[in-house]
Image (cartoon, rainbow, N blue to C red; front, side, top):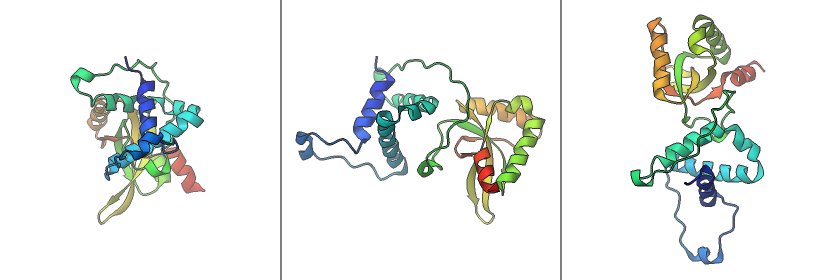
Length: 205
């Protein structure tokens, strides 16, 4: 049974730019990364993970849930006969997810979220979130709030208020259905963006 460590080692070998190639390999043509956004992102992630695995393993632990989600998603690309069984990780305790690196701030998240409202300013979004939690405490209990910027043609930049994370779109959709039943807006989205507390704090400085 292949383990997640084997998968990560493969990523490290493929992505690490600091490892000197073997003499025999120097004569071999190296395939270039495809010039697409997702391919370049995958290459950047593999390089960053390889570096962290060697020099800052504690940082890898902070993104373990997303790391396992990525591993499962990539392994699912294998042919049915090549399916890989990954070790079952213990149920993670929900804590504040670390913000993504600045270069990946607008990259889609592996988790799902619910879009609750849009605001012009982070402080206004914070007040809106507080009101929603008071009104729908049972539905939003334990969820985190994130803000992601979006440009709307002819209207300018807005901050989308999202709540999550959810492991599947179905879980997020179930919460949306409950919220919409009360007359509130809700849409299933990815859980990208920055923690609202960080953005509100920055805006107040």
